[in-house]
Length: 461
Image (cartoon, rainbow, N blue to C red):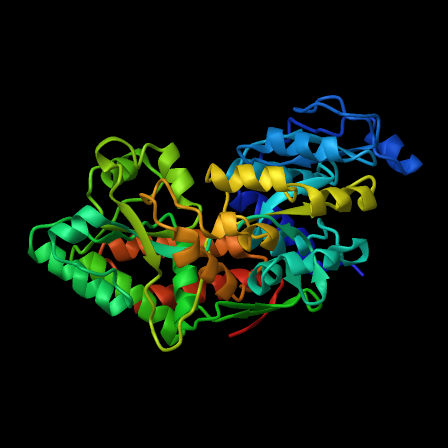
């Protein structure tokens, strides 16, 4: 039976991802794919970015990890049954534009695609991803924590294999804390606000930043407070629960809106040149971010020169210290597409790519990823590692490992991309002083409910 949501959602997803008029100019499967599909074998791919190690059938992969060339080589060296043909078609919006275009065209997807966990529902509802349970997904389930596995699962189905995650914590400048008499990092958000006021009163920098372009952060912080923004089950794809203006959601937006209004945090979009310059020059006392942040920050020039040796990390402040909650920002997976020529071989790749010791070791030692594979996170070398960015602090042991283990997972909706865009618009209004957090939450609820209904969802509020 055809799902009435799919057609409309596909077109909308293209619009949201700025891909309405885009075409994929990079089809790694080439023109011979259809004939090969009829024969039931993977095509020989010719535009791979890596070398083949033998004549085994090839599986096409789109992925953007910085060390993906080495990861592909490591996999191919270890396999005589299958070889990876890897291409980097971009990351973030650029990659998702190509993915959505290929879904809409019903051709052009690779066999295996790298996706962030919060995007999976958008593609499963379009029947673009394969349930990996029949292909042995549960064989590797024990390698991952509860939250990481929940993020790639919908009901009893598993649509991707986790690789890395982003357990959140509070990165802070020890020089700023010392100068303004903050002896310990804030353990609660109330303490965070009090420390922010103390530093400002003494003429110091803003304490953090309300970046409107990081809606996933605020979704995470709202769930930390107890919000459950969405309810969704692939078994009932037309049903969607939306609760974006509950008290917990309003409390979090009001908290950050109040900090913004008082000038206690900045209003700069993150990942920009101006923001990074501010981080380097001590404009921000803290950075509420994920475990992957040191790699990104180092690459952007943080932790070098005058800002070297001043960084430390502490557990994320809590709303209720008696009931601590761990949350996550980011993290990527490998899924098998329904366009895959040989789904069994593709599943071998999804389960085994970036899962070998050499790739994982390079990933975490160079701070490219925070691995979720327990074979790494339980190793003494990883646990006891002294982080160069954090001036020798054992960040994994003291902060990140516990946060990753405690993370319980999220429920993401098929309209997450649209939701993020609208939440971002509300954060802009909050920073501009046009509305408070409660008003933003009410506007968001009305907007998202209306949108979901136009897409054919039966909405429960």
